[in-house]
Length: 259
Length: 264
Ligand SMILES: Nc1ncnc2c1ncn2[C@@H]1O[C@H](COP(=O)(O)OP(=O)(O)OP(=O)(O)O)[C@@H](O)[C@H]1O
Ligand SMILES: [Mg+2]
Image (cartoon, rainbow over all chains, first blue to last red; front, side, top):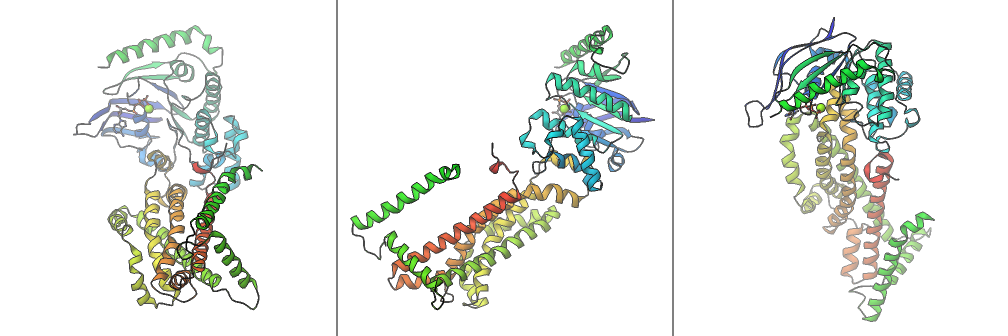
């Protein structure tokens, strides 16, 4: 079964006004259950918008969209997906641990279970020593890691990640990449991953969607031939370099398409 | 030690002002009824304190302070409590809060203290309820307006997060809107703490029982006993400041995470 199916999706913001923006046009996309898919493309090409449509945070203007075979609204009600937003969006009044427990509270988990899961997730994102801290006491990258822990903590079947590692330094980012692959392989979660880093997309995913802006379209779907498990050797594989070069060319074309 | 150093400038300013005041009154030989010396005010205060502490004496000043304090507190609790409650109810239905907000904002600009004589008629001039009612109405509007703002001005991304969890409206209220409103509520409560004492004393200027600060000040002033009048003013100030600090203390307790209290 496909985790995500999009057919002929259009999204127009402020239609019929001076500020009309065609954010997405003719998006056709199938993401298989358990697949790791990346979206790359220049700023403003509609990556976040596509994520929001899948998450039922925005309605599409036209087209057919299914998540786990259901309407996105139903998938949201069933808590099928976890989302890591481009912005960490932590609640200032909650400690790090309480922030991670938020979805569990909303979903009615027992108190002991919540604390246990939050601790495990925070250990995983290397913030186990910061559970009682408040968001303002953390750096931007640490805040983003908290938001990743928060999305993973209820083990959603689909993980939507919008530039989750953008605020991290190179080394933390590479460690987080490995950790994410480990979780993905251990849980069989479907991952849709937005990134600006070509190398990151090439390292992580099975398929890469290249998008162009104005209007936002999918120009290419690139299969990633690299085998799993991937580790630091992967980055020195000639296939990896060939893939990165190919993606770079595609993105250069995408940029040149811009008016 | 560091605490002392922190407050040292404030203390220095207070001492300087009091000294300058004392010296000015002496140097220019200012009449007592125009401006009494701080030392005279403190002497009167010490005398009243002695009366109050003595088992078989009465201090009208301290009795008045107590009465006015309870009027202010009573009005504050009723007014702020119903302000928060009404805000919670109206914000549940956007249409209602949008329809009522303009009236609340307009009412907030009305000098409500002008209704004091009417409240005296309604509740009886010596009934503390007449003063509490005025105080309650004065603090109701700023509290309600600020609470509605805090409940509705929520970051779109924070709402989106709750939506992604398919959270029920009650959950959004409890876990997002109310915590978001706390800073707004407390800034209203701080204003209300000062307003409530002002409201109570000024309402008493329009008449009230003998043992209340407003009546005490008017009577002593018209009897030209200015040290007594000024001592009562000082009492009102002390109560007002203490009230404000109590609200501030509660605020720090309830929202240690807030920007204004962050240390290091
Ligand atoms: N709420 C909105 N109202 C109007 N226009 C919007 C809105 N959200 C996005 N857009 C427009 O839609 C287009 C796509 O935006 P989107 O945020 O999806 O881009 P993106 O690919 O995520 O960019 P970035 O890489 O910078 O995050 C942009 O032109 C943007 O101006
Ligand atoms: Mg984006």
